Length: 240
Image 1 (cartoon, rainbow, N blue to C red):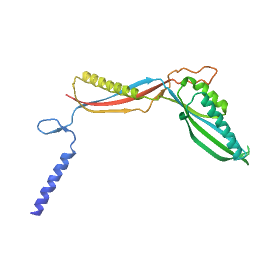
Image 2: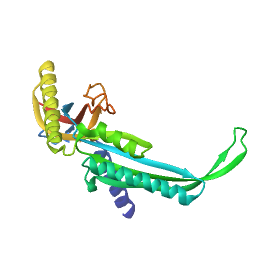
Image 3: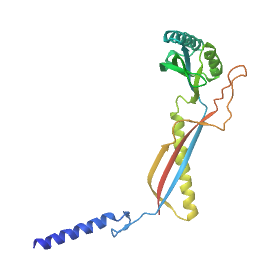
Image 4: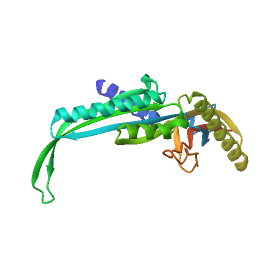
């Protein structure tokens, strides 16, 4: 009796597993399982806008035979740079020290023989520039004040909430238009919308082919160009 009961239970388990492995959703009235015919499309939304801030990393690198002299030189240059930034109207909250390093450096002769050891002091400051029209003259000023490293300039948009919202709308509209076009071309009708996915391609990205304006020839030429915010959307419709 126990053996018969075990066989019946095992058979029921196998039937249940086979049913669970069959994909699809019920679409017929008799409870059968069939795959739902779908149309899946993707769309892109882009919004172009002009940057309104610049991120700049300015540094002072000093070296001397002893660490005290190197520090004194570096502090003097850093103070001069801070004064230049203040004169240009950069707010204190838009200036932040990001790195300060002190280390010995061994020098070598052209033949590879060790020579004197010098001490190096590096001080790097992050600056947020809100007046882009003054960026060229500002860089000139900090270089004349003693900055000897500028670790790249990047442009950004302070508030891109509205642009992201518009890019999402454009991405969904683009995907919907593609779905309607495909349905028309294939002679079918769009049914229920089953899934919507919207995702960003990242923050504002520079448009490298754009030609931005530059500062006057007497100052460092800086072109801000354009930024683009891009959103992607994917939609899946059932086919009637």
